[in-house]
Amino acid sequence: MKPAMDPQRPSKPIFSSYAADPELEAQIAAFVIQMGERIDLLQDVEAQRDLALLRDLSEKFAADSRELGYEPLAEAAGRVVTACLERSPEGAHKHLADLTEISQGVRRGHSSSA
Image (cartoon, rainbow, N blue to C red; front, side, top):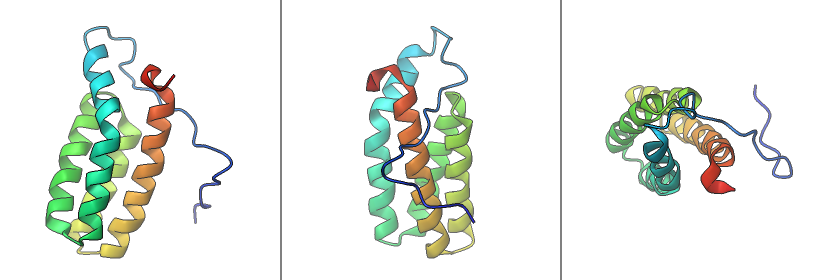
């Protein structure tokens, strides 16, 4: 079992595997800047227990994450999708918490947070 995140010890920075690609620089920056709002929306939908909408939004988030080189984020969003398909609100909640933690690492790894 994974230990809970220590609030005194922030998650490690996560960098896009495409960070050195100047053609994706603007897209990556926009994704990271908008990520907080997207995570907030996922959390709101999860709180409403709308697993169908949570699945759809998480699938899109996973695809966007993967396209921009954030595989850990894409995998975490994929676990939310799986929990939704299994009709597990508890699983969706747990995996969304993990996704939120990973997103904090992405923010720390991007120059827009500096």
